[in-house]
Length: 255
Ligand code: PGA
Image (cartoon, rainbow, N blue to C red):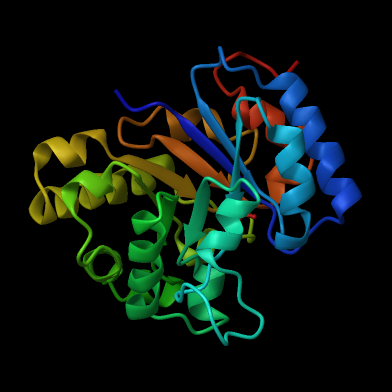
């Protein structure tokens, strides 16, 4: 069974104080009897402080990126050991902003994925096509390539520590969401690719999140789709008023 997985990506937002305040609110409301996995990825500067807030809670700590090298002369980078040292258990790799704004390619992303897994960090691997690629009818091909390249050399026993986030680039921060049907269709395709790369059993247990303008008013219909197992939430994860209703999407309205 796939446990719904709701993750918040805070991107380049929040001071330490703001991050701690929101983390405290979430911890108070998200109990481990909620049949869901919840993760937040604050900016690097707030990880240490947020880590102590989350300790012993039902909310996991994530990072938004990670260096492809383990250590050494890499000015400005943060290593897997540093992330583990502050209590991070998930790392988002290959977010479209990393791919398209910071020029990360599949080879670099693959290095990061393998390094994170080799050090027992859970990985959220992001994939997704641009609007231009969708309009050219190559969305599936693009996503397939990102999966094949991103997962190169990842063994099937490691795949259980990988979550895939399908985030069509044109839906991120734009207010445009893929229709639940379109998103579900791509999730089905992703499972097919994973079946070909690994096997049916691996594909069946793989958690696939949707990301791109997920809000309290669309989470329910997205999550109602068979192949959508969770959400990677940007803008709406920055306030408890919008993030909690997403986490509690099947509890009726937010508390
Ligand atoms: P958004 O961002 O929810 O603000 O569209 C999603 C993401 O980038 O992960």
